[in-house]
Length: 252
Length: 284
Image 1 (cartoon, each protein chain N blue to C red):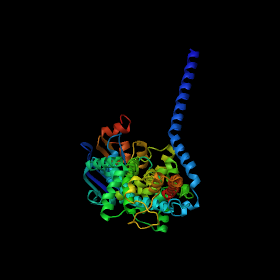
Image 2 (cartoon, each protein chain N blue to C red):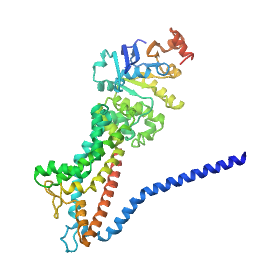
Image 3 (tube, rainbow over the protein chains, first blue to last red):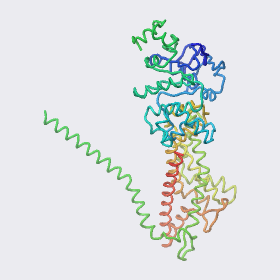
Image 4 (cartoon, each protein chain N blue to C red):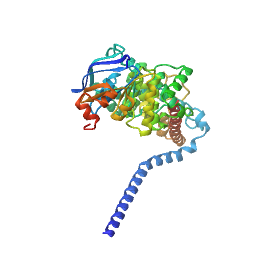
């Protein structure tokens, strides 16, 4: 695993009002690898991933401190709008824009940022839908509303929408928790494919999922990063007792 | 035991039926006035509605024929002016209140809007009179449109705010996560999602101001002739109906009824046409 570090997180703290949700997180994300964040509910894993593209601070009363380097550049000092174009995000529940067609949903990020060249849009929409393994299912109904798709398809639509703005890193915040096993399987296959072109961070409360898709895994507990290592190491020979306790199902 | 269960079941069924019937009767009662008014206006008005009514100017007393063509166009123009003034302020104000109006300023604006919507329309007419008619030294369509626009603002603001607040945070976040600036997310994702409901609110406001008479009497006044100048008095259906209705002439009374019917129909048509139009742009 001799690759470059795409993201480096140094002493990251986060708060909701007075309540500290993250405490001195230190880790890194390798280029074109999948990094999973696991941990019990309320351990701060969603807060953590939302700090990475500065979505955390959009919530009232939320703030953060520390350093997050994207290719060596501190994203805390870059305009959040620009950060989010480079670091895309897919949420827990599928969130297609209800007023837009399938096509417009995928094109939304580009259109809203002023791209109006039709052939360019067509090309990117098709490419993004193919990358999200959705194109063959929707190619004859691109003008139908995005919300007419099934839950699993909607989530892949949201992935396509995130891919269309050509991010370097993609954050997946429990992308399968609202989906059935078959749709979950499709998303996991997709993650394996996307790894070739993108750097991926995924939050999951499903340990098997982390074991299946991730190259690196970080274990969070009560706002702290307990252990971070190569996935196989975390699941076979964890160093910390608490990690072992969690992955063997003794708590959480 | 078995018997007891049976009778309980029947009792519950009976209760349900009674309540269903009650709900049905009350909802019927709620719409009866609407149909009574519509029916009464229709019966009294339809006899005087004819082609002339839509194409000709009013005639002096005693002279048969004539219509309300200038007043119909005048009402449309004045309502249009009101929309141009009231809608941008109302809608954007609603967006601001929903997205940023949590603090003291928001509270104050919300409170002011609620007070404004409770002010009698005639008072707003006086306000427009002092502000525009008095300074311009003449009645004008502009003053009328301004008065109606002010009446629209609070309704549009508050409905926009409420409906925008109903748009789930997840959609706003999805927009932001695409690297779209916040104001664009507000206008092109959030507002667009809430638009269907806001539009209904706008149509209700338009319907309401189309029927306003008092604020127009001393702003746009009236005009017996064609006029398209916004700085001149302009005829409107409501003022014309009012003038006809308080007159002692039977022919004018019939025209007042006809005017009422046409006004109701116009509001209905505008609502239906724009409802369809708004659905189309929503999926465009």
